[in-house]
Image (tube, rainbow, N blue to C red):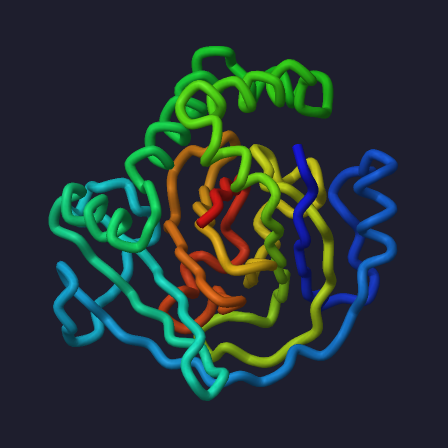
Length: 256
């Protein structure tokens, strides 16, 4: 699996990862830069079935139980600020059609995520990871097989993209500025093995953008939200996205 760039913000100077990382991840982790987060104007827009609406509350988990499919779309505006569009779709067909109009394939993304989550449950991956303290090598090969089986070209292109992720304990409803730590990774079925379980507070795609799907549980279960980000538009898990702050434990990425 190709590596990804992740940012983390430290609230405490004595922060220690939850586990000792393998050598390649540990090197990236220790060499991560810490810098002040720059201010950037962020505007929010709300849409229901693509029609602009009044602001609405966002459910913590996008599991379909409320009858809506949720999406967060991030774009750079002409002044260099970020426009965050909070979408609600009353049916998945409209959500899929909107993705296709953007040159994306969200139906395929769901198929891959659902297949991987089903396999993880069926193979009892949580117990295996707890037992050996790592993800078995055969799981990575199985992920590649699932991606290649469903869409070889799309998945090959996607895995060459990078994403930056921030961790800032001070983030929350007020979107306060903070410091950040960086790490490179290629998406992860178990963020705790990188010392990043429930520590992600923001992310930014590296390149032209991409699709990031964030999950509350390991191995792509309990989807928090789907993010489409274009043109290096970063997304902070604060304000109306506060429910995602320090809540993720697995992460899927797909290319544009």
